[in-house]
Image (tube, rainbow, N blue to C red; front, side, top):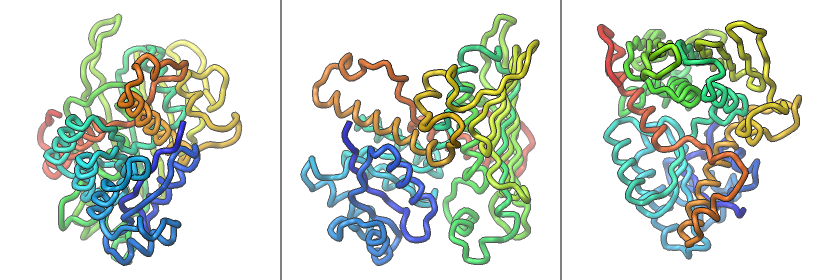
Length: 399
């Protein structure tokens, strides 16, 4: 399986997440970094390209220049996918342009800032048939995949209660006033935004909930706040959720949930955790100790599953990279998202080259799994509903 040639938009000097994406793609040696428009100014963009070793003729001053120039290159030389790691409000335009120019897209979350933008991207993908991945990287952890399989197989019964929390403390003071780049754009309310804490980390919590349970939030009661004095965008979110109704041996069940997303939880680092309780048991996973999964039974002992155990599901085994007992974490989970995206691109290309579907799908491997454009669109709808409802919660709002 050959490498996918990609270009990156954003991720230049001063960027944390761009380097993470590039490192994740290198883990499987399945991607080749060929070009970039890595910053918002031509000078800094080209300087950043030099830092990461891109050739001068493929160091572009803007994403428009990159997409136009790459589209003119020979098919066996041009980039095949565009990776977008710019601030949240700048995702939509280059994503649509890349699709229209014939390139697959990998976009950081949240997808965009408005439902209208999300629907435009849906239309563009439907018309082009290209792959579009959104990097909800926490769904790449092996034990998250194990939890998903166990819930799907009914091992904890029908889901009744979901508690998902994403607590950070790094914005407990006005860090944005110090010139810290990451804090500045995340708390900027002067233009279009995808929310503060709700968009930045609440979007991860919402997607993780849907991924593990396969349940869809149907209504919410949201309370969004800016708890740090003088901040104009939410840094704390507390949301009640009601999910779609599902059948069970005891009759219909409609799960209830609580979602907390806070960046002012003083002292907390990256505390994403989820607890799911069903009619026959429950489970718990914590991102800061990601290699274990706790599973409780209604009548029976509590079990602890470890990444790398022999009895895990095929999806968890496929997402495991090193032997049990050797810690895996953030980069490896990110790489699993890129592995699935690459497999999907190659599968699409194989079909385009007139191979039969049975030939391209003949494998004992688990199904290709990566967060899709649909995940991103659902995330935008969730975030916008919370933002629109959050300042003055007085009733449940439908999703």
